[in-house]
Length: 181
Image 1 (cartoon, rainbow, N blue to C red):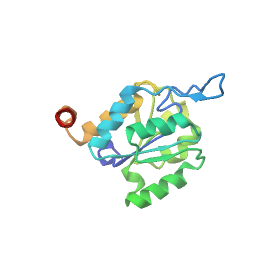
Image 2 (cartoon, rainbow, N blue to C red):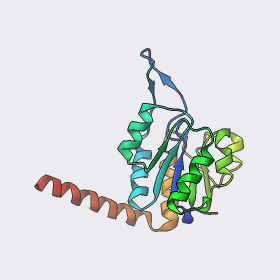
Image 3 (tube, helix red, strand yellow):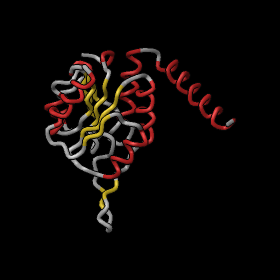
């Protein structure tokens, strides 16, 4: 399959939206480093009408906070059988796996990656994952891989520079309205 069919982008978190390292402070709070470039990519995808989802095996308040900031459409944490949750999302959206871009980095992502219409991995994903995807980002997880993948999807659908200019015009116009009020 190809990126042109993507209507839903589904992301793992650790190793995809983050660098895969677990940062646990002396206060026992887990910290996750998210890259702002990935956040802008997600904003561009949403602007282009693509739905977004996070399905991750771990639970973390930082994921909930970041997903809220980015207005991710579906957020599921503590999920070990990701395909079951994804099937429920797809049914609610009247979509199929052909419509899905799934981004994963490790063996627990393989069952979904093998069925996704456009399967992707960050450059530092494990080799067996990279052997089972359509696209491998040049960037590592947590270092802009999601942004790179989203730009590839958007470019397959239309001129990326044109989309960015429309996005910027819309953001600038809404900021001007807020300032004038």
